[in-house]
Length: 219
Image (tube, rainbow, N blue to C red; front, side, top):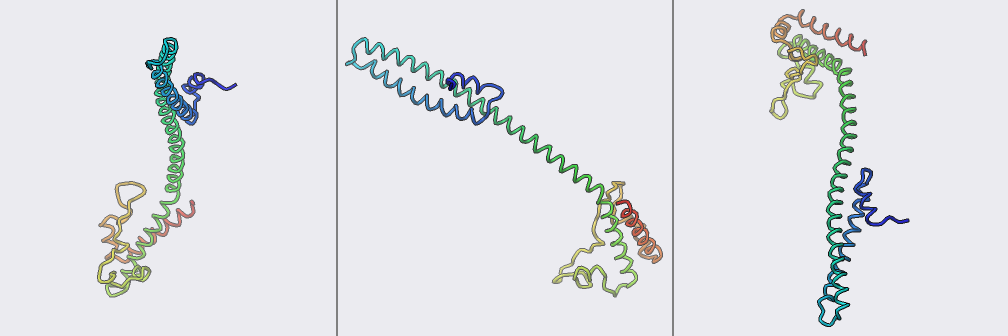
């Protein structure tokens, strides 16, 4: 048995109501309002028509009163349903966001684990390469062409169309250990010492290589 409009209205205000059902009921009530308004207008015209006899005019006036009361009730129902629809949609959006937020948290935590597992080795490999570049440049002297320039397809003076290009050894690389020092460049005292002492430079290269080997063994 089909539910009455009042039963459907009561159900729409319940905790289990769906937005689609409430929206459909709002549309139905809007249609009922149009019909009730037309009925009230018709009954009013009959009630005041001078050609209507007293019985007909009284009956029309009663019918108009009922129609007006029905309009008031329908308008009140529609207002409550519109508020209910807004609340349901807000709740649906919150649930959707909670699901999405959980997915985002999973993605974030996965990335955090990947960074923790992979970045130290990447950092160590970059440091090893940077030290090797410095050592190679040191061995070649001022007139040589850097391995970095060859690898990057650049002129020995690190320029393109006359514009200078930043060198890799000029980069700033934050330390993953957040120990107060950058991973690169290293402390200027150590860097300057290595630049003037070939043995110190080779020791730095060897130390960086050992760090890479250590982390690769752990991986």
